[in-house]
Image (cartoon, rainbow, N blue to C red; front, side, top):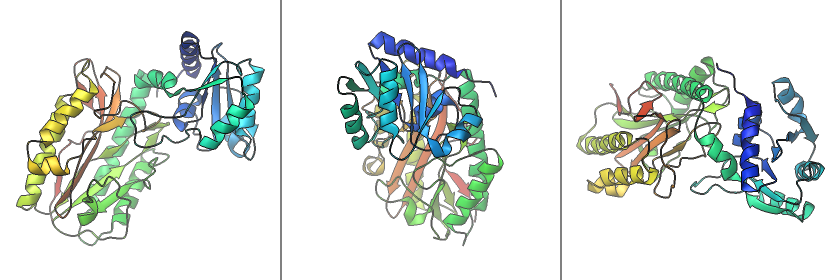
Amino acid sequence: MQPIDFTARVRALAARLKADGVSAYVGTRQASLHYLCGTFMPWRGAVVVTADGGCEVAYWAMDSERIKAEGCPHPVLEFTGSGLIELIAKRLAARGADQGRIGLDLAHPGAAQVAPGMLTAGEYLALAAAIPQAELINGVGLIDDLMLIKSPAEIERLRRAAIVADKGFHAGLDAVRTGVTENHIAGVVEAAIRDHGSTWSWSVTGGTEVGAGERTAFYRGVTQQSTDREIRANEFVVIDLHPLIDLYMCDLSIPVFYGAPDDAQRRAIDCWEETAATLIGSLKPGRAVRDCAAGAVAAFGKSEIGRQFGLPLFGHGLGTCARTRPFMNAASDDILAPGMVIALGTHFYQPGVAGMRLEYPMLITATGAEALAPTPPKVQIVAL
């Protein structure tokens, strides 16, 4: 794969800090650590970037030798126990950045979920006490603006992640049959994506999600951790998988129906497919995300079941995190631009009838949008 210039990323962030009058950015989110350091960093840590271009990493001592060996390009300083904040304060003081504006990973407007690694309330209070002359601000946007448009090297990794996800999805699809458990299908999917290079199923929902029948259709229900529930004839199956390739994520879920849909199920399928197609067709550079979301809401609104059971949530960004812009909802201020990568979502949950979820990686191009996964975003019918 194409190499990534992590030094250039630090320079770009430092230039943004200088332009905004910010002395330093302290990134504790996993997204920031992965984006700036290039190694898998699951434990507590921080990357400290100053406006003069300095960059250091504070990381838990029990894992620091591995990240050094695996190529972290910046100096790595270790802490033990709960010493992260003390170390951050010392490094900010050493670089003369402890009395200015400090950008922190505090909050992500537009996201219902907390991105992994956001600073905790306790850590914030400890840092405020340690550097009392600093002005602590939410610095998420400082780096997220840089991460929003993907480079060719990033797109290459996201393409590969989508292909791996597609292979895993089809392995799960082939395993759907009467009497097989959700857990078994999840295991088949996990084996397939691992065999094709995935190193971590990143989702907080238990890795690969598989749900069948009534478990696909909880009202407004967007989580189906797999269980020992067996697959039965004539029901929906959710398969939602989350591979990681060289720190870049995919999120893929395409609805499955096992058997022959009845009339009510077919009406639900038609409603969902029309809305998904409308949403995909709306993805054009220069278009406001909120307008795309409004169009999809209107598509759901053509039917009573769509108005009642379709969700007004249509996806999120993809990169070194999936809790990232652009958030595809009515609250977004983002404008679609070439190089954005989105896990496009279309959710429909009608208790007792149907549960369908789309998580579909799309690349915004100069003329529209490109699907990164080969399987079309339509309900996959598996014959009995």
